[in-house]
Length: 184
Image (cartoon, rainbow, N blue to C red):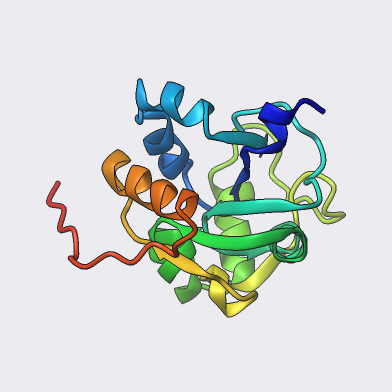
């Protein structure tokens, strides 16, 4: 491994139960991504073609609530292999929109999605090969694993992401002194 790559911060991003808006906001860093490429190495992400979560990750940004058994497993893998874990966006930090399903029993949700709204096949997958088994509740990431920092927003703005990553590059946990209000 060449020395340049060895000195870069090893960063992963993970997408659990969410809409990918946080990752889209990350991509909205635009030309700052080029500057970031000199400082970090993306070692795992839905925007990279990496199949297994690697060992020895410096920072992992986790988007989305924990909604199913696959998310639970990934959260534990992330915590085991990451020095710092950041809840990335409001679904990861609070459950947000994803947790709205918590008002309904899983059976009702599955009936609605796979029977009532189906166009062709009117049955719920029952062997969990097509869909992962749902958790009883969609929960924020820190309800399952230890989280080192929280990056709020739905999604966080590129400027907030830039600030957080630069704080981590400087060896500091990002702390936001003001709440960013958004009106849509």
